[in-house]
Length: 249
Figure 1 (cartoon, one colour):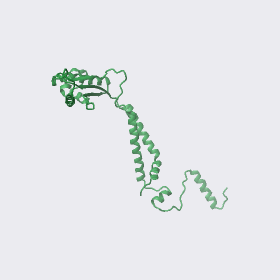
Figure 2: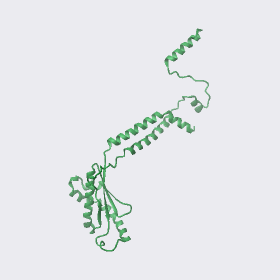
Figure 3: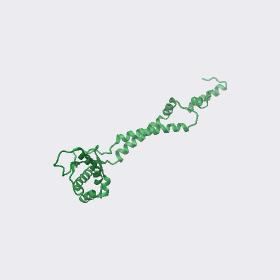
Figure 4: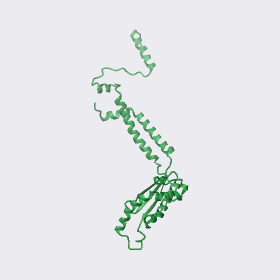
């Protein structure tokens, strides 16, 4: 049997309170979990630029081939940063981080900015101050170690992370509104699906419309529902009096 649009609407309206309850509970749970249970994570970033080599610095202006060479060199530098040659030095110089070289490798993310000569180093931590100190230390050590690896000085730090910023750092995972909206949408879809599933599994006939729909037969009569027991008893007594030939007052 095919359902019409109004049948879908009726199914939803019939179980509207169940749908509302599921959506409210899931949305509130997502909001409370996001606000109280998720620990804030802070992010600190530095930027590094790969520029002309030391031997060419005093020569003519940059040409296109040199820029392209530097762009290709960035991919190499991105891999070098996340190697023990850099991270072991950072771990040795900064024992206060209480992190091994492998821990630092997992913590730092290196990206290039839109096919430019700029690289960004990103570190996330539960403490913004620690994240800033770690990413600054990695950037400085990388700049120091590159000349010993490539025998060139073509790395310049554009900016270090501010350890004590003027504004309070905002956690990068503080997405309470987004989580609530996602929970609202997902729970609404799930609740509507449950409503249709319950209606599909319910094969009982409750109304005259159900009789016409499922049996395609007309209804000749029906038994009225008596919600008030006292009313039912009164009507029963009246019926007995009429049957006995008494006058019903």
